[in-house]
Structures are given as structure tokens and as C-alpha cells.
Image 1 (tube, rainbow, N blue to C red):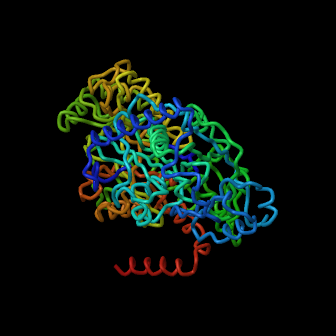
Image 2 (cartoon, rainbow, N blue to C red):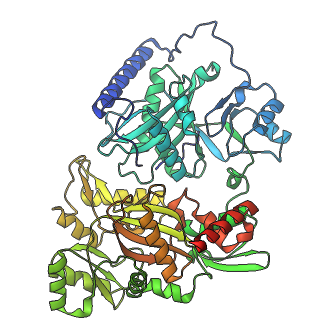
Image 3 (cartoon, one colour):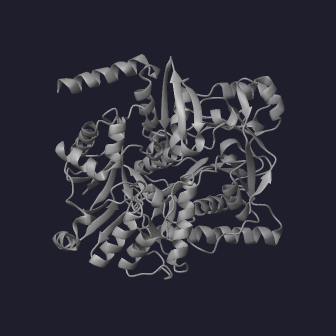
Length: 624
């Protein structure tokens, strides 16, 4: 049921359906009314929920039922009479898929039949009794729920799956099953932007195999980790529960990892209780961490972990020397390379020092023909600073050395604000820079071995009002969600930059934000200060790619994150901001950043065909 994944940019709202948010809300209201009326009648007569068309001579249970859900098959253990047949079905799992055997009666017997092939999944099963469930009186705020209605929806669901490390589904499969009686797909859509914020899959057991218990189950609950609206996951669970109750099902089951305390707390809050059913899976690369035990170096942050796991997958020896600070060594075939996250021995001290000093970075890339913003040293004096501010209208103040957006103030329009920002930046570095404020979007391009691997727009943190909470409370709540979605790497600091951004919008931290009102609370888009990341690799303009690669070559750095301020990722206009010598590769999944990093360090770990492709590409680059 894999409901532990809670956390988009999508097609236009209601695309392919012709429905508006109001239509969807009205339909949901009718749905809840019908559901409540049915429950009232059942309670009055002491009846259990009736199944459509069920009678005393109901059809027999389908034997050996294995329902294809695109990411793999849902194998209903209670429909198998012999454990050998269930094991044989699991052994028929297709490559890059994840079959799941649920409601296994005697898991110990099943495992005894194939101890090398299958394992007991370390998850709990939870059940919601639909006859006693109470619908929420509060409708979703800022988003609405609907069924999958277009191919674009299917692509957005896969994007969210990828962001949550889940197995993708062929988009055609989603579309082919949109009218299936046994499977239903729901999505949450932002009322304003039309972005898909989350999704859930439901399986009707009665329609799947004539389940005499009249059950249903919830699968693949996934919320975009970038979603700003709270309560998306809860709303999807409730929507599915009410949908199945209206269809006459008796209960809704889901599976959640035993240590996912946050998800378990949510389900228990909604009325789910644990039931003693077990799940069995086949041993494969997708499930590997579930049966090999926890990582011995689980103290590594996500940026080191993604590289270490890719190295181990290839049989490269890993030695973690300082998990807290992300240091490890990789060894294969007599070659050993020390790393700190994505910074390796292949990056020279000279290249690292160029990236560390923003004045040096600017000179190097400007000399290579890369466009840079106008800049002035803060030490130039008040007269020069006033002239610079008057010329550009808005400025950015930042320390010459630093990372993760610390000490950066954006959009300053007065000398008083500029002086305060300079004093703040000097606490981090004696040399402070003042730059023209270039309006646009913050684009991060990951360049590995002088080739673009990933590109993403980074957006500043934005909160959405609910008419009850203060801006301070909304920021704190969003910080908790961002922290949970990024392994504690992202939070919105309540510092001078946040206060200044809020004040420029006409608010204070203690103001209550009107319901549905969106407020940008910082001008910088760094992940560590609450920013969100949105992949644009497939649409980024070639001129922007060329600028990033040219910058990397000018610095002579094999792995870097190049930051550009752009009008749009699809347009050629840009200004260079900075180069990062240790970019967070984990931020750009599912793009193959870790794979390309390990390719760079250990070319012989690549398949021979892949090595030949890379060699040909480098030869072609040299010829041009």
C-alpha cells in the first residue's frame, strides 16, 4: 500500500476534463452527502455497507489474483491456495518492477519455500473501518481533488513518484486504466497554478477478485515535496476513503514502513488502526535496502548518501571516514579517490579557491565571455555606493566567500538597508560585494565532466495563508514540512532577510495572512533557506547550457553547480551569479547526477558501450 510517501508543475487546471475547481468541490460535496446519508441508513438498521449487486449467490473469489498496477503487480495472498504457486508468481516479477504480495496468511511457510528469493517486508498494515469513519467538515484550501483526466496528469504523477524515489509507471498505463473499475487514480491540483500537488491510487478488492470481505486498499500516496499547501496527503486519504465508502466497501487498508512515525501518526489521527497482515516481496535492487538492513553509515547526509549508494551498486569499495561532515573514500582496481559529497580530489585547489572567492569567479568567467552583472566592492565608500544604487535601483549585497545563501540580501532599495546588509555580510567575510539586482528566475545547472547533467529552477520559499495562522506560524509549519521532505536540509530562517522581505510586502511576522493569499518570504532561492527546486533539464535553452559549460571550463572544475539568473529557462538571456564547487547532487533526482559523478571518478565501472558513447562525444567536441 506504500502509503508512507507523503510530501509539481503540471498541465493547466482541469486539462482534458472541462471541469473547474468549483465543479470539483461541488462534486466532492455531493459525494460526502451521499456517503453520510448511506452511513446514516446503515447505522439505523444495524447493517454493514452493502456491496453493489452482491447477493447470497455472489460470484466465487478469483483464484491466484495478481493485479497489474504499472509499477508492479499487487498479488493478493488470500486468493492462493498453495504457497508454491504464490512463490512462483513472485518469481515472475518483471525487470525494474516491484511486485507486492499482500494478505499473506502464513509468511513463515512462504519464506521457507524460497528464502533466497523473497523476504518479509518491514511494514505495518493499517485499516480504516468505513462504517464508523467520519468525513471532515473542512474542505481543502487552495487545491481541489479530482480523478486523473489526461496524459499530462499521468506524466505529473510520474514526476512526483520520481521525486519520492518511487517506481515510475508507463504514462500509457495510467491512461489505459483511467476508467478501470478495480483501480482509481486521484490527484490534488493547485487552484491557482494548475500544478499537480499529489496523488493516490485506490484498489477495489471486490471488483478485483470478488472479495467477500468487501475491502479496498490505498497505494502510492505521494505528495510533491515542493508543495506549499498543508494537508494535501490527508485530503487525498480522506477523498479515497469517502469514495470507497460511497461504493459500499467495508474498509480501507494501507501499508506503511514500521519506522515512519510521522505517517503512522497521521493515519491514526484519521482513525486507522493496525491489523495483523503481512506483506512479502521479491529480493531485487529496488527493494535492496529493505532486506540488507540499515546502512552502517546512516549518519551521512543525503548529498553523500546518493553517491555512496551508486558506488556500492557498482561494486566500488566505500570507506566512510567522517559521516557527520560527508567525507568518504571510493576504491576500485587500485584507484582510490577521497570525496566530500560531490567534491573530489579531481577538483584542484586552484579551482576550489576560484569558486570560494566570488570576485575571482567573476573575473575568470567574464574573461571567458560569460555575461555577469555589474558589481562594486562595499569598501568603495558611501558616494560610490549611492551612485551605484541610484544607477541600478535595486542591489544585492553578499559576502565574497560563503555558501547556502548565508549573508545574502536581495532587492535593497535604500542606503540604510544597504548599510545594514553590508554589516550583516561582514560577519561572515571581510570582503563584501554589491551587485545590480537582476530580476528573473534562479537557474542551477549541474555540469559534470564539462557536460550538462541537470538543470533546475530554484524558487524562493512562499507561504499560503489560511485566515487563522500568523505569518510566523505559517513559516514555522512550512519549515517543518521542508525539513521532513529534505532530510533536515531545508528550513526558512526567521532572520533579517526574511523580516525585510515580509516588510516590503506590507506585513509583519505577527500578521494573519488571508486565506489563499500567497506571500514570498525570502528573495533568495537556496534550498537550505527554504527554497524549492523544479527540474527543467529537458527544456533549458542551449545558450544557457553553453554558458554553464564555458564557465566550468574557464574555472577548470570537473564537477560544479553554475547559478544563472535568467528571464526563463527556455530563453537565452542570463547573468552569471556564482559557481559552487560542491553542488548537492541529491537535489536533482531523478536526473542521473550520482551516476555521472561515479562515471567521472571510475570510468571503467561504466559498461563498455557507455564508455564508447562518452569517448565518441568527447571526440566530437574536440573536433568542433
